Length: 314
Image 1 (cartoon, rainbow, N blue to C red):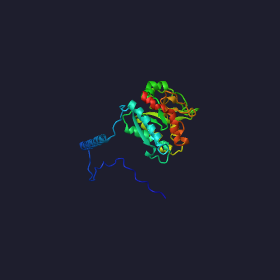
Image 2 (cartoon, helix red, strand yellow):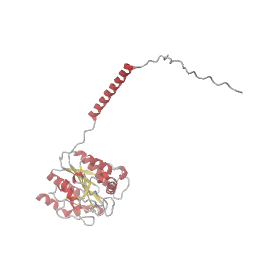
Image 3 (cartoon, rainbow, N blue to C red):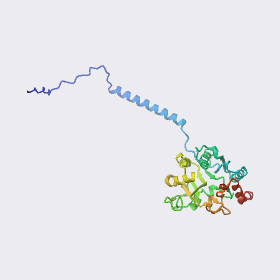
Image 4 (cartoon, one colour):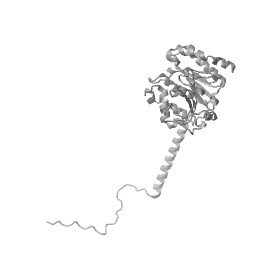
Protein backbone atom coordinates (compact mmCIF):
# COMPACT_ATOMS: atom_id res chain seq x y z
CA UNK A 1 0.00 0.00 0.00
CA UNK A 2 1.25 3.46 -0.79
CA UNK A 3 0.71 6.56 1.34
CA UNK A 4 0.42 10.03 -0.07
CA UNK A 5 3.36 12.38 0.34
CA UNK A 6 2.80 15.28 2.73
CA UNK A 7 1.96 18.53 1.05
CA UNK A 8 4.92 20.64 -0.02
CA UNK A 9 5.65 23.85 1.83
CA UNK A 10 4.86 27.03 0.07
CA UNK A 11 7.75 29.05 -1.25
CA UNK A 12 5.80 32.17 -0.39
CA UNK A 13 5.17 32.19 3.40
CA UNK A 14 2.50 34.51 4.78
CA UNK A 15 3.65 37.94 5.93
CA UNK A 16 4.72 38.47 9.58
CA UNK A 17 1.76 38.84 11.84
CA UNK A 18 1.82 41.63 14.44
CA UNK A 19 1.73 40.74 18.18
CA UNK A 20 -1.77 40.21 19.36
CA UNK A 21 -1.01 39.80 23.13
CA UNK A 22 -1.59 42.55 25.67
CA UNK A 23 2.07 42.56 26.90
CA UNK A 24 3.58 46.05 26.63
CA UNK A 25 6.66 46.64 24.51
CA UNK A 26 9.73 48.51 25.75
CA UNK A 27 11.58 50.30 23.07
CA UNK A 28 13.95 53.11 22.34
CA UNK A 29 14.21 55.95 24.83
CA UNK A 30 12.03 54.26 27.41
CA UNK A 31 14.40 51.26 27.68
CA UNK A 32 17.45 53.56 27.87
CA UNK A 33 15.86 55.57 30.68
CA UNK A 34 15.13 52.45 32.75
CA UNK A 35 18.68 51.10 32.33
CA UNK A 36 20.29 54.41 33.31
CA UNK A 37 18.02 54.78 36.33
CA UNK A 38 18.90 51.28 37.50
CA UNK A 39 22.61 51.89 37.13
CA UNK A 40 22.36 55.15 39.02
CA UNK A 41 20.50 53.42 41.86
CA UNK A 42 23.06 50.62 42.10
CA UNK A 43 25.91 53.17 42.10
CA UNK A 44 24.34 55.12 44.95
CA UNK A 45 23.74 51.90 46.90
CA UNK A 46 27.41 50.86 46.44
CA UNK A 47 28.68 54.27 47.54
CA UNK A 48 26.45 54.22 50.59
CA UNK A 49 27.60 50.75 51.65
CA UNK A 50 31.26 51.63 51.02
CA UNK A 51 30.95 54.74 53.13
CA UNK A 52 29.31 52.77 55.93
CA UNK A 53 32.09 50.21 55.92
CA UNK A 54 34.81 52.86 56.01
CA UNK A 55 33.40 54.33 59.20
CA UNK A 56 33.60 50.94 60.92
CA UNK A 57 36.63 49.48 59.16
CA UNK A 58 39.64 48.50 61.27
CA UNK A 59 42.36 51.12 61.39
CA UNK A 60 45.25 50.95 58.99
CA UNK A 61 48.45 49.20 60.04
CA UNK A 62 49.83 50.85 63.14
CA UNK A 63 53.55 51.51 63.00
CA UNK A 64 55.04 51.39 66.51
CA UNK A 65 56.50 54.70 67.64
CA UNK A 66 59.19 53.05 69.76
CA UNK A 67 57.79 54.08 73.12
CA UNK A 68 58.88 52.00 74.92
CA UNK A 69 61.68 50.67 72.71
CA UNK A 70 61.47 47.18 74.22
CA UNK A 71 59.08 45.22 76.42
CA UNK A 72 60.46 42.33 78.47
CA UNK A 73 58.02 39.42 78.83
CA UNK A 74 58.37 36.70 81.44
CA UNK A 75 55.84 33.98 82.27
CA UNK A 76 55.87 32.60 85.81
CA UNK A 77 54.89 29.12 86.87
CA UNK A 78 54.06 29.89 90.50
CA UNK A 79 53.34 26.29 91.36
CA UNK A 80 56.87 25.22 90.50
CA UNK A 81 59.06 27.93 92.08
CA UNK A 82 59.21 29.64 95.44
CA UNK A 83 58.02 33.22 95.93
CA UNK A 84 61.46 34.46 96.95
CA UNK A 85 63.01 33.25 93.73
CA UNK A 86 60.26 34.69 91.53
CA UNK A 87 60.45 38.05 93.28
CA UNK A 88 64.18 38.12 92.59
CA UNK A 89 63.55 37.45 88.88
CA UNK A 90 61.03 40.30 88.75
CA UNK A 91 63.46 42.65 90.45
CA UNK A 92 66.11 41.74 87.89
CA UNK A 93 63.81 42.65 84.99
CA UNK A 94 62.50 45.83 86.60
CA UNK A 95 65.96 47.26 87.29
CA UNK A 96 67.12 46.63 83.75
CA UNK A 97 63.90 48.05 82.26
CA UNK A 98 64.08 51.16 84.44
CA UNK A 99 67.63 51.87 83.31
CA UNK A 100 66.75 51.82 79.61
CA UNK A 101 63.15 53.03 79.63
CA UNK A 102 61.77 49.60 78.72
CA UNK A 103 58.41 48.12 79.63
CA UNK A 104 57.88 44.86 81.53
CA UNK A 105 55.06 42.36 81.24
CA UNK A 106 54.75 39.64 83.88
CA UNK A 107 52.02 37.01 83.73
CA UNK A 108 51.27 33.58 85.16
CA UNK A 109 51.06 30.53 82.96
CA UNK A 110 47.59 29.90 84.40
CA UNK A 111 46.37 33.20 82.92
CA UNK A 112 45.87 31.48 79.56
CA UNK A 113 43.65 28.60 78.53
CA UNK A 114 46.05 26.19 76.86
CA UNK A 115 43.44 23.43 76.35
CA UNK A 116 45.55 20.82 78.10
CA UNK A 117 48.83 21.69 76.39
CA UNK A 118 52.05 21.91 78.47
CA UNK A 119 52.39 25.15 80.44
CA UNK A 120 55.44 26.19 78.41
CA UNK A 121 53.04 27.02 75.57
CA UNK A 122 51.91 30.06 77.61
CA UNK A 123 54.96 31.86 76.21
CA UNK A 124 53.17 32.58 72.93
CA UNK A 125 49.87 34.11 74.11
CA UNK A 126 51.89 36.09 76.66
CA UNK A 127 54.04 37.66 73.92
CA UNK A 128 50.95 38.33 71.80
CA UNK A 129 49.25 39.85 74.87
CA UNK A 130 52.23 42.14 75.42
CA UNK A 131 52.05 43.33 71.81
CA UNK A 132 48.44 44.34 72.39
CA UNK A 133 49.17 46.09 75.65
CA UNK A 134 52.23 47.90 74.26
CA UNK A 135 51.34 48.62 70.62
CA UNK A 136 54.07 51.27 70.32
CA UNK A 137 56.90 49.04 71.52
CA UNK A 138 59.44 48.36 68.79
CA UNK A 139 60.55 44.97 70.12
CA UNK A 140 59.32 42.27 72.46
CA UNK A 141 61.98 40.32 74.33
CA UNK A 142 60.79 37.08 75.84
CA UNK A 143 63.06 35.86 78.64
CA UNK A 144 62.44 32.66 80.56
CA UNK A 145 61.83 32.67 84.33
CA UNK A 146 65.05 30.66 84.71
CA UNK A 147 67.20 33.48 83.36
CA UNK A 148 68.81 36.66 84.68
CA UNK A 149 69.92 39.79 82.85
CA UNK A 150 73.57 40.21 83.78
CA UNK A 151 74.89 43.18 81.82
CA UNK A 152 72.83 46.36 82.35
CA UNK A 153 74.91 48.31 79.84
CA UNK A 154 73.69 46.42 76.78
CA UNK A 155 70.52 47.54 75.00
CA UNK A 156 68.43 45.12 72.96
CA UNK A 157 67.86 47.60 70.11
CA UNK A 158 71.63 48.15 69.77
CA UNK A 159 73.25 44.96 71.00
CA UNK A 160 70.92 42.65 69.05
CA UNK A 161 68.36 44.26 66.74
CA UNK A 162 70.21 47.10 65.02
CA UNK A 163 70.42 46.07 61.32
CA UNK A 164 74.15 46.73 61.02
CA UNK A 165 74.75 44.74 64.20
CA UNK A 166 72.64 41.86 62.89
CA UNK A 167 74.74 41.84 59.72
CA UNK A 168 77.73 41.07 61.92
CA UNK A 169 75.98 38.49 64.11
CA UNK A 170 73.76 36.44 61.80
CA UNK A 171 74.76 32.82 61.34
CA UNK A 172 74.01 32.22 57.65
CA UNK A 173 73.68 29.03 55.61
CA UNK A 174 73.58 27.04 58.86
CA UNK A 175 71.37 24.01 59.66
CA UNK A 176 68.23 25.12 61.50
CA UNK A 177 68.33 21.96 63.58
CA UNK A 178 71.93 20.87 64.21
CA UNK A 179 73.92 19.08 63.17
CA UNK A 180 72.64 17.99 59.77
CA UNK A 181 69.26 19.53 58.96
CA UNK A 182 68.94 20.03 55.20
CA UNK A 183 67.03 23.27 55.85
CA UNK A 184 69.49 26.10 56.48
CA UNK A 185 69.28 29.76 57.37
CA UNK A 186 69.20 32.01 54.33
CA UNK A 187 72.59 33.15 53.10
CA UNK A 188 71.28 36.34 51.46
CA UNK A 189 69.31 37.70 54.43
CA UNK A 190 69.94 41.34 55.37
CA UNK A 191 69.70 42.91 58.79
CA UNK A 192 66.70 45.07 57.91
CA UNK A 193 64.77 41.96 56.79
CA UNK A 194 64.92 40.32 60.22
CA UNK A 195 61.87 40.27 62.51
CA UNK A 196 62.73 37.31 64.75
CA UNK A 197 66.04 36.63 66.52
CA UNK A 198 66.96 33.62 68.64
CA UNK A 199 69.78 31.18 69.35
CA UNK A 200 70.62 27.50 69.20
CA UNK A 201 71.98 25.25 71.91
CA UNK A 202 73.40 21.76 71.57
CA UNK A 203 69.95 20.26 70.99
CA UNK A 204 68.43 22.75 68.54
CA UNK A 205 66.55 26.04 68.57
CA UNK A 206 66.16 27.57 72.02
CA UNK A 207 62.92 29.43 72.76
CA UNK A 208 63.96 30.48 76.27
CA UNK A 209 65.17 33.88 75.05
CA UNK A 210 64.13 35.49 71.79
CA UNK A 211 63.32 38.91 70.35
CA UNK A 212 60.51 39.64 67.91
CA UNK A 213 59.89 42.89 66.09
CA UNK A 214 56.44 44.27 66.86
CA UNK A 215 54.22 44.35 63.78
CA UNK A 216 51.85 42.47 61.50
CA UNK A 217 54.37 39.77 60.64
CA UNK A 218 54.93 39.04 64.34
CA UNK A 219 51.18 38.56 64.82
CA UNK A 220 51.05 36.13 61.91
CA UNK A 221 54.08 34.27 63.20
CA UNK A 222 52.79 33.88 66.77
CA UNK A 223 49.38 32.75 65.57
CA UNK A 224 51.02 30.18 63.32
CA UNK A 225 53.25 28.91 66.11
CA UNK A 226 50.32 28.72 68.54
CA UNK A 227 48.08 26.85 66.11
CA UNK A 228 46.00 24.13 67.88
CA UNK A 229 47.32 21.48 65.52
CA UNK A 230 50.81 21.99 66.97
CA UNK A 231 49.66 22.24 70.58
CA UNK A 232 47.87 18.89 70.30
CA UNK A 233 50.59 17.12 68.33
CA UNK A 234 52.43 16.11 71.50
CA UNK A 235 55.90 17.23 70.44
CA UNK A 236 58.55 15.95 72.84
CA UNK A 237 59.68 19.48 73.68
CA UNK A 238 56.33 21.16 73.14
CA UNK A 239 56.57 24.64 71.61
CA UNK A 240 60.31 24.32 70.99
CA UNK A 241 59.94 21.37 68.62
CA UNK A 242 56.87 23.00 67.09
CA UNK A 243 59.04 26.02 66.29
CA UNK A 244 61.66 23.83 64.64
CA UNK A 245 58.92 22.26 62.53
CA UNK A 246 57.39 25.50 61.25
CA UNK A 247 60.75 27.15 60.61
CA UNK A 248 61.77 24.24 58.38
CA UNK A 249 58.46 23.98 56.53
CA UNK A 250 57.39 27.62 56.22
CA UNK A 251 59.81 29.75 54.14
CA UNK A 252 57.85 32.90 55.04
CA UNK A 253 59.02 32.40 58.64
CA UNK A 254 62.56 31.30 57.84
CA UNK A 255 62.89 34.41 55.66
CA UNK A 256 62.47 36.64 58.73
CA UNK A 257 64.58 34.61 61.16
CA UNK A 258 68.14 35.26 62.26
CA UNK A 259 70.23 32.92 64.36
CA UNK A 260 72.85 34.67 66.46
CA UNK A 261 75.65 33.23 68.64
CA UNK A 262 74.20 31.84 71.85
CA UNK A 263 76.13 34.11 74.20
CA UNK A 264 74.68 37.22 72.54
CA UNK A 265 71.24 36.56 73.97
CA UNK A 266 71.03 33.28 75.84
CA UNK A 267 74.18 32.05 77.64
CA UNK A 268 73.80 28.93 79.79
CA UNK A 269 74.97 28.40 83.33
CA UNK A 270 76.48 25.06 82.36
CA UNK A 271 78.46 24.07 79.32
CA UNK A 272 76.54 20.81 79.20
CA UNK A 273 73.56 22.43 77.48
CA UNK A 274 75.28 24.99 75.27
CA UNK A 275 77.66 27.94 75.36
CA UNK A 276 78.53 28.74 78.96
CA UNK A 277 78.12 32.23 80.41
CA UNK A 278 81.15 34.54 80.42
CA UNK A 279 81.44 37.87 82.18
CA UNK A 280 80.01 40.63 80.00
CA UNK A 281 77.29 38.50 78.41
CA UNK A 282 73.80 39.98 78.34
CA UNK A 283 71.92 37.20 80.11
CA UNK A 284 72.37 33.77 81.66
CA UNK A 285 69.88 30.94 81.78
CA UNK A 286 70.06 28.51 84.69
CA UNK A 287 70.22 25.39 82.60
CA UNK A 288 67.81 22.62 83.71
CA UNK A 289 67.68 24.08 87.22
CA UNK A 290 64.05 23.21 87.90
CA UNK A 291 64.33 19.52 87.13
CA UNK A 292 65.72 18.58 90.55
CA UNK A 293 63.15 20.48 92.66
CA UNK A 294 61.80 23.97 93.26
CA UNK A 295 64.74 25.14 95.37
CA UNK A 296 67.43 24.26 92.87
CA UNK A 297 66.93 27.39 90.74
CA UNK A 298 67.18 29.69 93.74
CA UNK A 299 70.31 27.88 94.92
CA UNK A 300 72.01 28.01 91.53
CA UNK A 301 71.06 31.67 91.07
CA UNK A 302 73.41 32.56 93.93
CA UNK A 303 76.31 31.85 91.57
CA UNK A 304 75.17 34.85 89.53
CA UNK A 305 74.16 37.23 92.30
CA UNK A 306 76.67 39.76 90.98
CA UNK A 307 73.94 41.17 88.75
CA UNK A 308 72.76 43.25 91.71
CA UNK A 309 76.16 44.91 92.10
CA UNK A 310 76.30 45.52 88.34
CA UNK A 311 73.17 47.66 88.51
CA UNK A 312 74.54 49.66 91.40
CA UNK A 313 77.75 50.39 89.54
CA UNK A 314 76.15 51.26 86.19
